[in-house]
Length: 64
Image (spheres, rainbow, N blue to C red):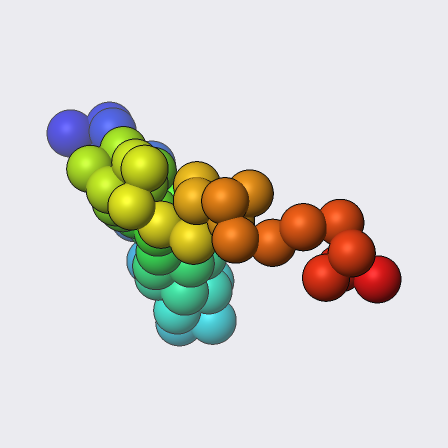
């Protein structure tokens, strides 16, 4: 019961703190989820993306 009281007094007593906690949590979740999904996509499509095959088609003369 003490843990619930501590959580309530810390995060939910004031509306501004509660909303700020929700926004911060959503932002952190989004950053972590995006990072995980990008790494998963890159691992599943290794060798098929432009960054992996660019060296075959672009020469140093083309970059200048």
